[in-house]
Length: 486
Image (cartoon, rainbow, N blue to C red; front, side, top):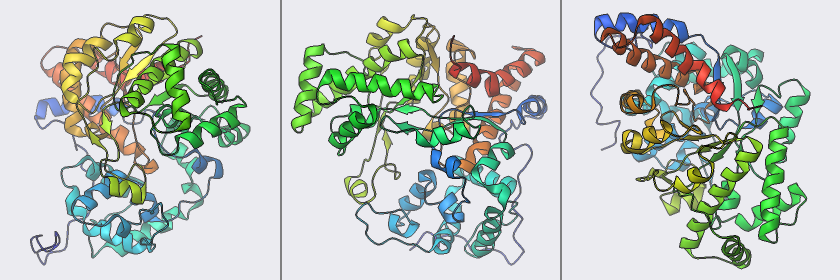
């Protein structure tokens, strides 16, 4: 029996329109909710600083209209597609490309119908919150998605996408985005960022240095990427010393292009350095062929330490995002590539893993790192105490699976008492879905307003302190956490 067949029969009454309740995600206690409303009003219209997203820089450089509703809202968003796949939809039917060029659904209207028919699957998920916000606030939709309404909603969104003020650059102003960072491979030539800078957007759309592809020796394209690193840097990467020099050169190029941060999505938070001799030996053998899995992990840990050393020199803020076993299902990875919804969290240890890095750079005036996790058991035990001790550290916002109403609440409840507010980064969204950025920041601001309102009603903060803190969390901390130091 299909999921659709299991749904209860609808009544003959006309369906309720799709609306957004003004108190959504705010506390239910009347007194606390009133305080939360007041706090939220002070932050709801503040500019957005989006320092960890995955919107492609080409979208801004080319500034072409978005393709269609399915290609904008469904196909590239693994939050959306993974739920449908978990209920039996084949990735191909959702338009997810195959790396081998095999057949996939190309009818965007049909893809969108499948999404709308599965709307009930998103109940209780943060995706439901973001999607509703997008449909109502961004596209003016007043129909609840369903098999019956899919085509009408598709047509309304398609008409909006065709409007000249709905292109990527124009949406920066509409969404109130003060600053947005893209995520760029170490091998990027940064030509699109140069194009944006020439047109006056270099201070508003900035790159982020992502070296994962060249530090994990078991990546299928590692050897090709190493050659490309050599080409783009102009430095021979056929030996370890040249490899390090090439990475330094690319970091310098990123800084010159306006980059404020680097991003590191390692499996482990381990930062144990190797001796130069051992690192060079592993690197040399990797150039010749596969190396042992233990050596892959040891080299990745070593390179995280090396990136910290370089960060202390050039000032790029390290964003460390460990703890996800990527591409959990081999067949999906082989058919469709990375980031297709089969990335699963693992337990992550930070206290011992980060100690080598923090022993060397934890109090260095030029070093800063922001720590993220998808293992919320470590908030009060490890991450909050670390951020509450080391001046170089800040605790990042709830990320990925924890980027949710309950995840955000648990974060504030478990981390604040030890780390305080000022040792966190403020909200940093993590999305490929460009039009979901305002929704994500809106949700964070509502959850923070609710948390702060409880402190006010419990007489632990004054109302003025709560308002000031809400503004700091929504705007000041994301700004200062990434600002370049003199």
